[in-house]
Length: 186
Image (tube, helix red, strand yellow):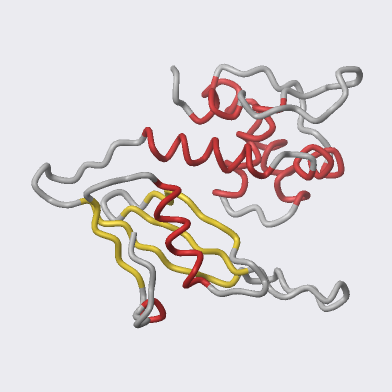
């Protein structure tokens, strides 16, 4: 089925060398995403999720993962993924999902920023990561998100997210931080 998350994940380029590939990249990405949705917060927890649920997931998606990759193998695979390609796959999947809103109701999209817990790194002198996300109210799907630059804030990033969505006729909601006198209008 074109447009399924698995099909979109298959379009992500594989950074690994052809020799020695034991696992299909799209299968590992799908199972890792499902592990995170189920609450996995580390590579070890992702490994355990895949190890425990592998046969059931293989049957549900028609895949053939013979065994779960080690947590170090998962780390190597996932850290080499192109983040822009993964973001593009998620955006394409979110755009395909239809809302259940009534035809006469405008589509409402909330744009809000959050600082990611645990992303601060004092050893590397790195500030906590701040993400700006766009969430469709009707079905609670995240349509897009962008990393806010360290030397900036979410005010200049909001028009970028709205423009990147490319949607028209929607009602965008933003918090009070965006009530500036000289804010850009999109």
